[in-house]
View (cartoon, rainbow, N blue to C red):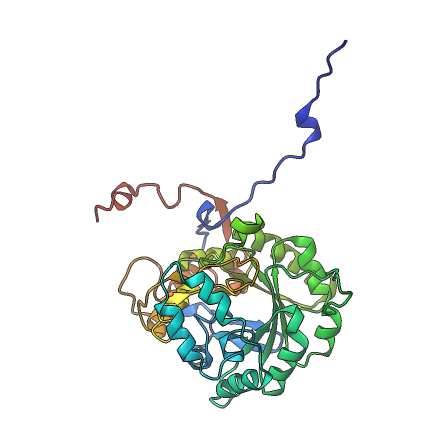
Length: 386
């Protein structure tokens, strides 16, 4: 009997190389600028913002009071309409219980407190509390609840709608036969619509064609999220941002309509944020870095939106601590050298040494594969001898 040899290499497609924040670095070019000449503003639909940072739709980060203060600092906060403020008359009591729970108790408690039914009157009240203070607000709901919750919030004055889930696609097949028509929703919605999350070229292009004004990029990179461990899905954030930004650029060339890209999650430092912007993002969405603010409602804790899933939680409560005021985290003065304070100042300084006057020009910065960027020459720092 003759033996048969099989060329495994010929029958198996090679794995693509992908990159996260620690894998890359930015290379200065021919021109530098004074930081004061750098413009951090960005736009979504007809709305313009001074700060390219969004506060994530997490209960540990955004409540109505935080949303107002974040607006005052030039940013945009996203309120989770399916969170505690849409379920409880007194969310503060629930926040206290979550903060007081032990590590072992936290997962079960999070599942328990989110079983309380959603109430439209509480959603409307939460939005009104922000709008009565003159602040702009984005509001978030999953595709299942988008029509009624986002509709109610928009009636109360919400400025931007966010349809968000772990992965949102333009073509969802429902076992019940009922699913959200994204194209119809975007066409009839009176405010800009952000859709997320996605990580690849073709799905992103389909969401743009459905009418999204902006896309959220990232599956599972957040400090609180465990989707990558539980489901095994995701794409490192630099590669994900590059792919979605490439789709954005192609769509813009073909249609003349510009869709903003927002890298969502996985950024620990201001350096990570600069890399995301250079990879093609117009803004970044932060959770844990902002949950550390004194104004954040989580009392030094944060947890992901999927942490309370009744059958398959994909997140965890993390202790981020309370480290500084919101204005210090965003604008300084920084008392640490970790890249976690004065985020706006660090982004502006990076733009200045890269010769980028605007975020659009920052998209043209040279990004290189550089896995040694954080360790080269850092022996004493790595050994803790500072």
